[in-house]
Length: 201
Image 1 (tube, one colour):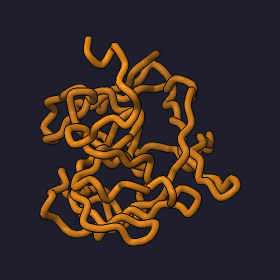
Image 2: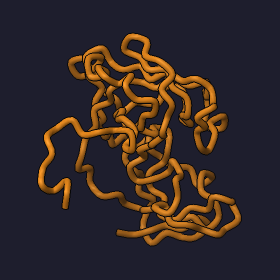
Image 3: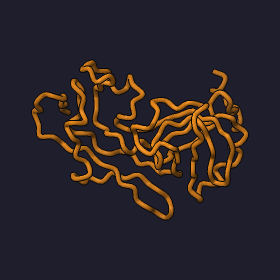
């Protein structure tokens, strides 16, 4: 595995990282990786001084099924807040029709954990410079959307259910972001399955 630092020379040719394509499969949105160079080329201007990228990512080893789409008032990444606020604007989680029944019981909870795919983020930064001053921090020590698997996580307030959609506050993502999962907030959730010995260990 080799690395390339912004502003420096690489010992290998610039390797284009895999891009994302969304395919329709029997009504379900599934995540696939399309190795299309023209969609995947990363511009050197995207890098801040001192940042480090992987020249060659590891092979794909997993897939995701999107369960819906997130609608927010943020039409571009620049308009997105760095962290969502529970008193922020109302947003909409539009769940695909085939997963609508999976929302049964969701209104029992005031707060939810929402996971989503940050599809506009690059995936090859190892070190990042959040302040654009050359000082770097490791990707895993940040909540930046730029990460090898760009999964976003927000705790949101459930305002109401509207059919197969949930109206919530607290999101920070761009309009049209693919929805991965919805879960009750951990502290307010009581497991529905019978207790087992490991629960009391």
